Length: 346
Length: 287
Image 1 (tube, one colour):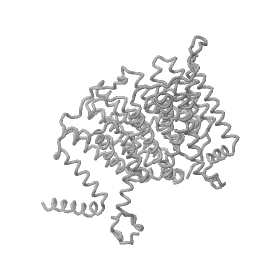
Image 2 (tube, rainbow over the protein chains, first blue to last red):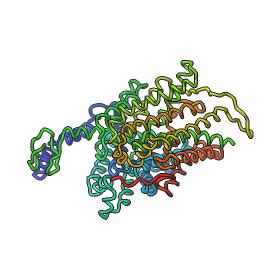
Image 3 (cartoon, helix red, strand yellow):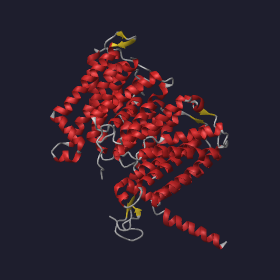
Image 4 (cartoon, rainbow over the protein chains, first blue to last red):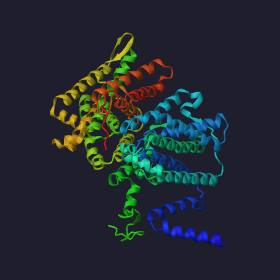
C-alpha cells in the first residue's frame, strides 16, 4: 500500500511541478484528457468519425514536420508516403489476406523503402530543387496507378479493405491512442540527440559536416522515419475508409500536409498536430456553406499567416511563455523571475 | 506530325509559364505556386469580357492581361511582401492564394467546362493532319513574346538590374538597386507573362477551375530541369518536356495516364546527373 501511495504522490507532484507550471503543458494535458473522455460525452458517429480522421492526419502532419521541419529537407511530395502506405496496406489485405495488424506495419515498411528510394537520389539536391523534385514522385506513382488498373483498381482505387474494428468507441480509442503514442514517439525522437542533429542540419549543414557527423546518413534516417510514420497513417486511412484510392496520392494531399505543418509552426511536432486539430474540423464545420468551404479555409490560412508568419502555435506559445535568459528554461509570461534559477526575466 | 504540333504548343505554353516563374524565383526567391492560377484567371477574364459582355476579343485579351497584372501586384503588396522573410509562409501563402482564385472562379463561373472561341477560325491540312490557324497564331505570339522578354532582359538597364539581382541579391542592393521595387516590377512582368499565356493558349484548351493544377506541376518540372533562374534553361526544358508528353500521348497505349509520369521521370534523371539542372548555376551554400 505504502509503495502505491508513494507513486501516486510522486505522480501528483510531477503534474504540479512540471505540467501545471506552464500553460502550454497544461493545455496539452487538458487536450489529451478531452480526447480520452470524448466518447463519454457524445457518441455521435459523425463527430467520432471526424476526430478519427483528424488523428490520422495529425500523424501525417507530424511526420512531415519530422522530416521537413527538423532537417529542413522540404518535402513537397509527402502524399507519396501516405499513398504508398495506403495502397500497400490495401493490397496486402485484399490480395494476401493479411489482417490489419499485419498489413499496416508492412505497408509502413514499404513506405520506408519508398522513402529510401526517393531519399537516396534526392539527397544530392538542395532547397527549392529538392522541394520541386519531391513534388514529382507522387504524380509519377499516380500515373503508374492509373496505367495498371487490374492491379491497383485505377481511378476507383481498391475498395473493400477490412475494417480494423466494427465498434464505434473501440475504433475511436484505437485511433486516438495510437495517434497519441506515435506522436509522443516522434516528439521523443526530436527531443533526443538525433533530433538535435536534425536541427543542426537545418541550421547549418556544413558546420554539422565539419563536426564529423555523417549528415547523409542522418538525412536518410529522417526520410525513413518520416516515411514510416506517414505510411502508418496511410495504412490506418485505408483500413478506416475501407478504400485506397488515387486521392491519397494527389497534389492537393501533399499541399494540405504542408499547409497544416507550416500553419501550426514547423520544427515543433505539436504545432502541426494542433494545426490539424484546428483546420480539419474547421473544414468540416464550414460544410454548412458548402460552396464557400475551401474559400473560407484559404482565407483563414492566409490571414493567420499574415499576422503570425512563424505559425499559429509558435506565436501563441511565445505570447504565453518566455525563456529564461540564463538557464533557458521556459516560464509563464506573468513571472518576474525564473522558476528554477531565479534570474530576472526581461 | 500530330506529335510535332502538340509538342510545339505544349512546349510554348510551358516556356512562357516557366520563364515567368523562373524570373520571380530568381529575383525575389519566391516560389509562386499561384503562378498558374494567374494564367487561369486571365483565360476566364477573356471568357467573361468577350462572351458575357460581348467585347472585341483582342481588346478583351488586352484588358485581361492588364487586370491580371494589377491583381498580381496587389496580391504581392498585401499578401506576400509582409511575410517575405519566412520562406515557408510564402509557400503556403501562395498555395492559399491559388485556392482562393480557384474557388472564386468556381463561384462565379461554376465548375462547367467553358471555352473561348478562337481568334482565327479555320484550319488547313498538312501531311494528313489538321492544323488550326489558332495553333499557328498561338505559336507565333509565343515566339514574339519570348523574343521581347529576351530583349528586355539582355538589352535594357532594367534587364541588367533583374539579372544582377538574380545573381546576387545583397551585392545588387549594395550597388544601389532598389531590391524590393525590383521584386515588384519582376512580379509584374512574371504575372503579365502568365496572363499572356492564358490569352494565347486559352482558346486551345477547355476552361475549368482546376486547370491550374496540371500545368503547375509540369511548369515546376521545366523550371527545375532547365535550372532555377535560368531563362535559356526554362526555354529548352519546356520544349523537351512538351515533346516528351506529346510523344508519350501518341505512341503509348496507356499514354494519357503516363504522360506526366514519364515527363517527370526525365526531369529526375537529368537532376541525378546534373543536380543544378541543365543550365542552372550551382547556388553557393547560403549560410
